[in-house]
Amino acid sequence: MTNPGESSSALLLSRPGIQRVPTPKAELFQLRDFASPAMCEQLVALIEKDRRPSTLADAGNDHYFRTSETCDLDPDEPVVCEIEALLAALNGIDPKFGEPLQGQRYDVGQEFKPHCDYFNRGGQDWEKYCSVAGQRTWTFMVYLNAVEAGGATRFKAVGKTFQPEPGKLVCWNNMRPEGRENPNTIHHGMKVRKGVKYVITKWYREKEWGW
Image 1: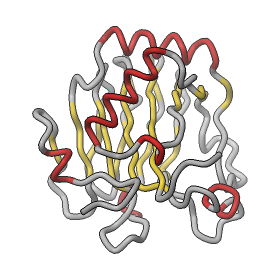
Image 2 (image 1 turned 90 degrees about the horizontal axis):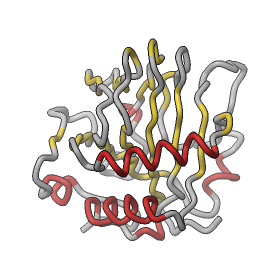
Image 3 (image 1 turned 90 degrees about the vertical axis):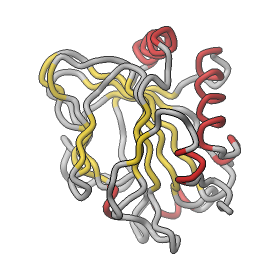
Image 4 (image 1 turned 180 degrees about the vertical axis):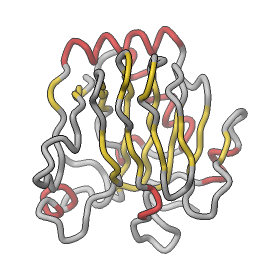
């Protein structure tokens, strides 16, 4: 029985084609061809239209820690509704526990240095980001295009690197079974060396999203 805002390995593995990374350190999966080429193309166009510099919770003194651009995707856009429905069918999580879908754009030289998606307990933004909806539970990320060089996502603690492929989904549980954050989910959005990388990301919370 999963808690609200959580999926399960059994449910995900019931989807044909999904693969779990063989490690006890984290629940980490990939699924190729999750999003169609047409969907990817439409999402890229939306990101291009409304992108802005990315921000960080608990930002430190490293101004180059996250150098991508971000787009808050309009939930009323037909393609956004379509991808949200696909995600709900895959992970079984009630959409009310999800953050709004977000797009990211990485140009040449841009990256997101090694980080975890959960919020740091006791961090300066803990109360701001977690008082309403709680901690982040699952992350679902979809690559929207192929990158000419670079742009991989590296999970160093797990020893797995994912290369961008159009429509490929990568997802992971940010929490351990006992309910604490899993530091083994640390990952690096590596620098794009040639071309541009587009992804969308969906985060889920312990409680209903109430912002």
